[in-house]
Image 1: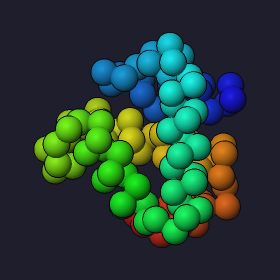
Image 2: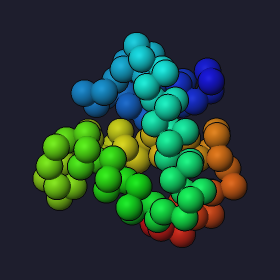
Image 3: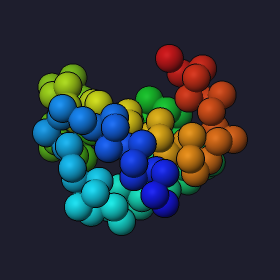
Image 4: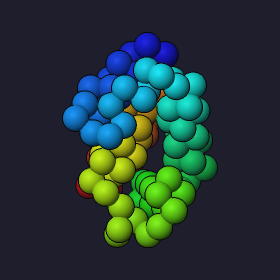
Amino acid sequence: MVTYVAALEDVLAGTVYEGQALEAPEVFLATGTLFCEQLEAGQSVDAVLTEYVETLTGGPIDAAREDDLTMAGGVLGVGVVTMCPQHLNTVAASR
């Protein structure tokens, strides 16, 4: 999904993750799809993001770097907009 990868690269510009969605788009697409599936199964946005960030960093979400949080939020936000827009209200309500 070219739109997904391009939009995600825009979000990740200036972070340590810049360029990674272009290098491994299948990883980021799979993660975006997973987030959509988790939301579809009824998981909260906070639970989805917390689990992902803690798995990504190997530590608590409170200790995550800003770049890690930006990447997680970007994958979720761009994924919802491009792959599962039926969850836009769920994400908006969690802010």
